[in-house]
Structures are given as C-alpha cells and as structure tokens.
Image (tube, rainbow, N blue to C red; front, side, top):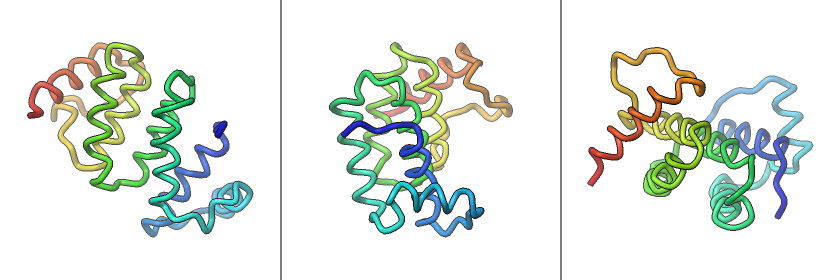
Amino acid sequence: MDLDSRFLTAAAFRFEAARGVRHSDFETDIIEESGLETVPPDDLAQTLWHWLATEGADSPLRGSAYWALGKRRDPRDLAPLVAALRRELPRDADVAYQILIALENLGEPVFPPEQRERSSRDHELNRAAAQRYLGNRP
C-alpha cells in the first residue's frame, strides 16, 4: 500500500474522532474523502504499523505515520513506539521527535519537566530527552 500525506492526515483525524474529538467540517471532509470514516481504528492502526514495518520503513512520511498513531493514544502502541524510538533516534531526529510526542500523548514522561517548550528543531534537547527516557526503560 502506498500511503500519502493526505491519507496520514485523515488517519490522524479518524483516530481523534474515534476518541470523541469533535472536528470541523474541513477535518470531517478529509476523513470522508479518504474513505476512512467507517474503518475501525484498530484496523487502521494495524495498516499503519504494517506499512511502517514494510514499504514505509524508509519513507520520508514515516514521521507523519507516527504522528497519526500518536493521535490514537492507545496504550497498546507503547511497546512498538518505544521500539521505533530506539530505531529512529540515531537515524532521524525529526522522526524521533514525532515518536516522542506520540509517547507523551500516552502519558509517558519523555520530556524533563524543565523542558516546557517543544520543537522538532531542538534536536539536541530532544535527543537527550529520548536517551534519558530509553535509559530508564527496562
């Protein structure tokens, strides 16, 4: 399956809608245009995880896929997100940042309390936060 950025945006909105987030007409239209309005979130997540493990493994859109999965806020994604962070941290700081945000959405303490501002451009701060988080994982 060849996913594009519009599909990933629709997936993020679909995950939010499944959690009860109310969307604007614009966001609802994106979900409907993608054909995802009736796709169960678990099936959609499985599609994204499979894509990330196969043809999306080297895609420049993988950060967007992790961003979308982060909108799901499902504790079942914790272990695969931690594994993805271990893989992506030395590879791509921007993708690792999206995974950190997804983990934070799950309530994981990925950023130190003193790091109140978050930016994908703060590569060194984000790398340090990720290394500290991963170092505290069993």
